[in-house]
Length: 426
Image 1 (cartoon, rainbow, N blue to C red):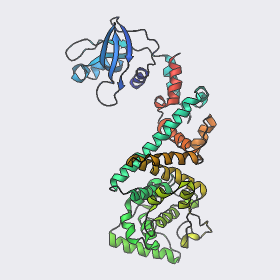
Image 2 (cartoon, helix red, strand yellow; image 1 turned 30 degrees about the vertical axis):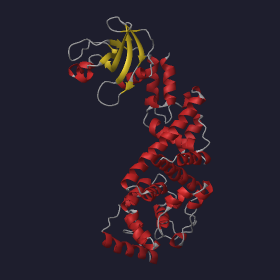
Image 3 (spheres, rainbow, N blue to C red; image 1 turned 60 degrees about the vertical axis):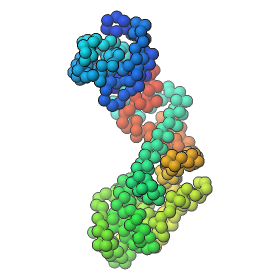
Image 4 (cartoon, rainbow, N blue to C red; image 1 turned 45 degrees about the vertical axis):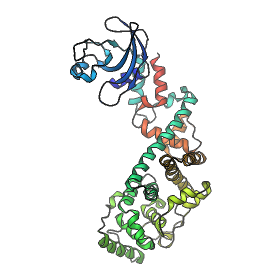
């Protein structure tokens, strides 16, 4: 409830401007101040006029005035510069540590505001505001989609920046880990990133001239060569022998096979084939980041991922079972996903971290040129009336769902804020 009151104060959503302190002095809020998310008073540098006198300082907010004493603020000098105590229930006077009384005001909040927030936050539906979306101006939604798209890009920049620090500025190492994660296509993304971190490029480059050894290293480190029946397949036996040799040479430790998810996974997305594709990119040296930076336009980028898996993988989706397969490693739709989740974030991060705004612009242009992702999140928002015409918008919708809707952070969502603001006026 205290967070709700902070929100009302921050956005000036109280019912009336005719506020008075508990001793009858008129209060006019010139500036509610800056919300503090750390220790100390709730709002810094507020400007409040009390009976015509300007006060500049901090504001503390509680549900009940007695919370001031219960939280020990009356003996804490960090709260001596509080100029106004804002409460929902005035049940006691409050004082600074030197005994001075602090002006106190009851904040009047519309009952409709709390009811509207409760309906949004406690609703069991996946998109509780769906029925109210037509009430939100299209400009508000458009601007929010743009902000969410950049918010999602910046969250990916943070991940990439941490990887760049981890690998001492090596963009190829960053690209390798990001490629592995992307090839998991959500279901096995965490597992493939773990595999890439466990089997770094510096180790793979020692054997980059041998595709057999690369596949043995990666499949072995993935735990996918342990305890399987070869059924007389010579290539699988070679992989096992190679990994046993390399394990002894480098003291390797494989992942647990249970890390991989195969249930409801289409054969084309089996981790075995994705790992074989990862080995393909390392064969003869990994330089995908360089190729991505040098690519001129979407056509050249697509060519980087139009890969044919040959040899053993021409007849296998997994190990030990021969099946007619497509030799194409990635479908056109899968390449779209790679461009969205690998290439665009790398462009944007490279531009942000090196000061090359040409690269950040290239990232946005790429996302705006690509078709939107086809998934349940995009479909649900489309059904609610939010149009999605490109990948930049679909990324925004994914950010909205994961960062706000799932977490029920409706008060931090511009759509939720608009709906709640209207409720506060009633």
